[in-house]
Length: 118
Image (tube, rainbow, N blue to C red; front, side):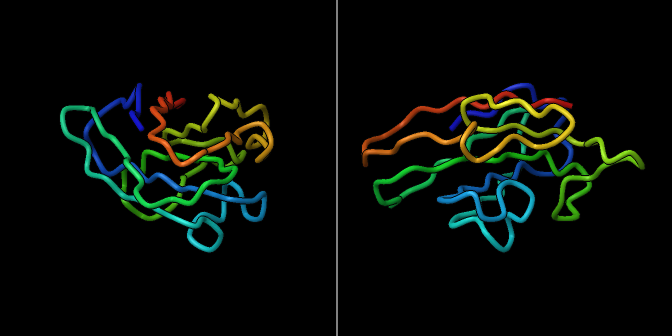
């Protein structure tokens, strides 16, 4: 999976793969079935998951600039770090649902592109 619109090379990109709505997308450390943390090089990063069984999944991606393991927000709860979701599901006042971000996976290579929003 290719990550677009990374604003700088500070910190890491965290990609979290979910197989159900439970914990999506905020509880990725507890609920995601697979998490990948990638260093950013020249404002570019890729997350490539391997050996994933067929099924329906959703991806949440964050640009953890300060590497504290979470998506930082301001006092109003708006994210201050980059985030993105599969299907380019959009966040309007809250994170998108699992249903908005879900995609089927049939066991073949899937080339996903996720654009970050800041």
